[in-house]
Length: 170
Image 1 (cartoon, rainbow, N blue to C red):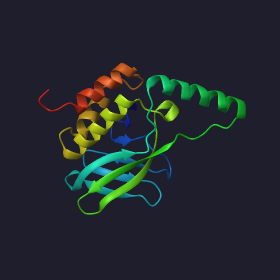
Image 2 (image 1 turned 60 degrees about the vertical axis):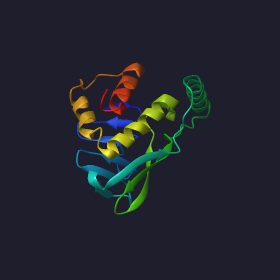
Image 3 (image 1 turned 90 degrees about the vertical axis):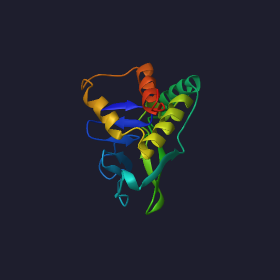
């Protein structure tokens, strides 16, 4: 798996947020379409039924504020022993047949906070995935070509987001 922006990318699927386990909710993107996951969530739409995908309630802060928040949360958890689950955010899937459907997803990024650039590029990529200008297969093919234990730097992740969200003529 690899995390790039708001996406958790495996060899078979791209998750908006963290890959859910058990009955946890989430949103999975495959070459066939979009699926909401979790207890009372299980719905599927083929790509030709999807009109848009967007997110709400994502924590976004500058890199400096993100670092400060993560440091505070670490100290707080160490002192109180009260570690929190990653925060959730809302994924909105606009469909032809069902209108707009909302699902919750868990943040995958450490500290639960995204930078403004990462967030904006991720939202652009969601638009491109929904309208078909960037096929989900591009993300899956990239993941299959990566070493299983390879880790990405922040610059690597941003480069990928820029490439996947760039207009087709670039």
